[in-house]
Image: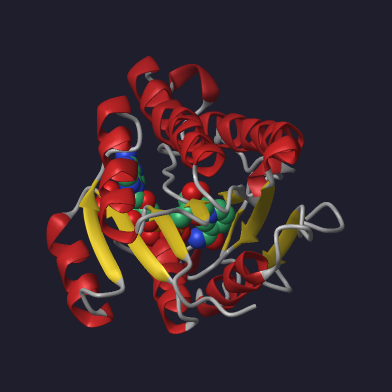
Length: 250
Ligand SMILES: NC(=O)c1ccc[n+]([C@@H]2O[C@H](COP(=O)([O-])OP(=O)(O)OC[C@H]3O[C@@H](n4cnc5c(N)ncnc54)[C@H](OP(=O)(O)O)[C@@H]3O)[C@@H](O)[C@H]2O)c1
């Protein structure tokens, strides 16, 4: 399907997967709003992508007013919305569960779960009101939406919750031509997974260097999911480094 004049919001778009997916959407002909907190990085991305097709909006997805402004600015510049890539996310330090400060837990829940919910609500409102109506929401889950790593309670609990959010979007969205789906990524080479090159804790108490894959594979998968017509949907997709420990209990 031609992506000319189709409009996407990508959260967490200043780096890593969000940046790669946003740029891949631009290449595929989309107009993209890049949302994150670091203005300097967003400005560079928009300069590279071109101001006709790209917009930077400083956004903290955990703050309702900030999210409202993200969607209002997007509608003002591009007139509508066809895709939300709910990508912004963070982890917490790998410490024993009982030692994780409540503030850290709350920070992760605010970004990984509350942020996705707030963006989803705003997207639903736009999708329902516009003509032609509808659109698609791709949530960024994780392999940790299926199986936790040691010492990852905040990250794993919120990523499991994302799966519930995705199913609710897919169900409640049906009546409004809204498609909800999820990409579950394993070990894409970004800042978040840099520590894997030095070794990360394994369930048997050892530490192991884990294989990673090029982030472009994730970006290409997002473009594929985004490019389907609204009457077709990749509900869940897992894109992972082939040899990472997941399938086969390790
Ligand atoms: N890399 C992987 O292998 C992997 C695997 C599974 C899932 N994921 C998921 O993929 C997503 C992106 O991860 P990544 O690897 O690209 O990580 P990353 O390189 O650390 O990038 C995270 C992005 O999220 C943004 N962000 C963080 N807090 C935010 C907030 N409150 N409001 C708005 N933006 C915020 C950051 O931008 P600012 O700091 O500028 O705000 C940054 O652009 C996350 O949801 C992560 O859980 C990644």
